[in-house]
Length: 223
Image (cartoon, rainbow, N blue to C red):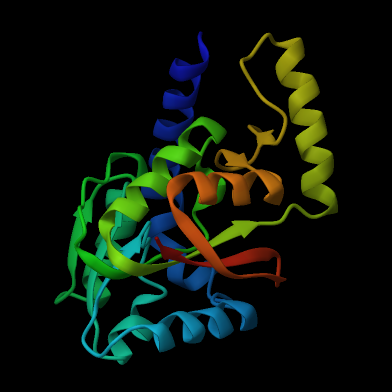
């Protein structure tokens, strides 16, 4: 199996697990989000937007961040590649426009004043990071804002990364260091230096970049 086929299979596996394993109980089992730092940055993001802005909730999942966007009177569009997760979001927020589409397949152009991509980029492979950031940037109007998070591996995850890489090489898999394939779903943990380089290449300017509650929080503007 070549690298592109392998990544395609990991994406399909991730979508299937979100649909069948996580979506039915998602709100009940993962109710600790958003954490304190998420809330701080959500507020910073919202303070940048004009009243009644149009906001993209990319990889919206079950809609855990929609109440904060809707609470400020913004028009929200939610997308996700998991039909099961979208069903949860639609049940809670039936008036919100939602669409089943992956981050890699977005085709919006200059449509949104702001966008968020929360707790999702860890499921994106390294070769797809530039594509996804480019798609998010293209979706924004000029001077639009993007807030996204990058998961930070803990001690257990760091051990898992090294173990997964060694095991993958032994099995002759096209794995790269930073990927975890024995997790419940595919995870990739990029170095923040690489993330900042990808952000710059995408035509986004970092306004604020901070660490908190297990994530790097990155607030950017389209330039």
